[in-house]
View 1 (cartoon, rainbow, N blue to C red):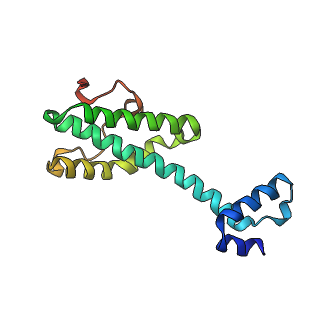
View 2 (cartoon, helix red, strand yellow):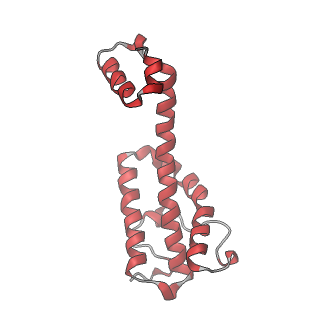
View 3 (cartoon, rainbow, N blue to C red):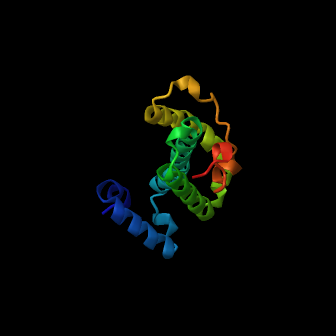
Length: 149
């Protein structure tokens, strides 16, 4: 079966064949078009995961800050979980650190929407741009108003 055809019919087998081809240095047989496409998609996927983690973290921090009467273990647990996941992601792929500011900017609007839906507070309650710095978001001791429960 042709390696390009295999891509469309059985992606898993296609990846296994490419691993074998690379290990055997049979570079001329590689489906370079699809291989490049898949590598680019992997890079995008890692960036999407970073943005998604920030959406959840920032939403929980906004809820923590703007709805203090609802603070509790559940909120702090969610904040801690996202920070642990972000730490793992960034330690596994340190080059993503160069993308932190952009990821936070991309996540902020969705984080506000999530916080707004959960709190039922008006959109005007939340700042137009994220007030939290990257180092604050990743700091396990940082909570808005510095009141951890």
